[in-house]
Amino acid sequence: MEDFSAHIPRLRRYARALTGDRFLADDLVQDTLERGVAKISLWRRTGRFESWLLSIMHNVFVNQIKARACRPSEIAFDESFTNSYAEPPVRAAQCDALEIRDLDAALDRLPPEQREVLLLVALEERSYEETARILGIPAGTVMSRLSRARERLRQLLDGGGAPVALKVVK
Image (cartoon, rainbow, N blue to C red):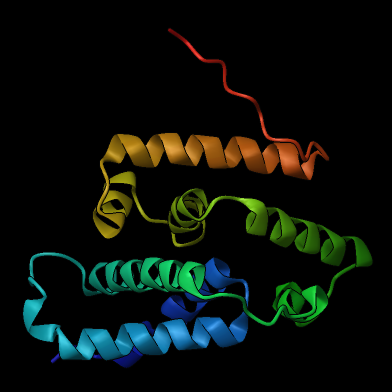
């Protein structure tokens, strides 16, 4: 049997970046591990175990988003509370904390499919092919979503909040 506990730190980091909330992230990790333990017989030992767990996490996260969309309404948390995890334990300078806060806010404004790809490639250092396998999409889609996510992130960090209007080509 695989050692699930060895993968918890990376799962928590990715879940926290996906959800933007430490409590939701902990729930996502728990749901992922629960499903992983229950479905361990389905793991094909040809790939990395961690990639398999990240695929499960992606599927659980997507299901949670769909479930939240069906609910009438949820209690809104204070934004400063939900984004408090972004501050590093020891700040080198006040500007660093402000930049991290701005980056966190910009990541929250990305569409989930772009944020997932960006986090897997940039934060988790996954290859395009591995990211494609985790998310169940073609590698070309990974590259285009990553490109759009990076461009949108640049715009948001440069102060351009309005999304780029796409030109309709006939």
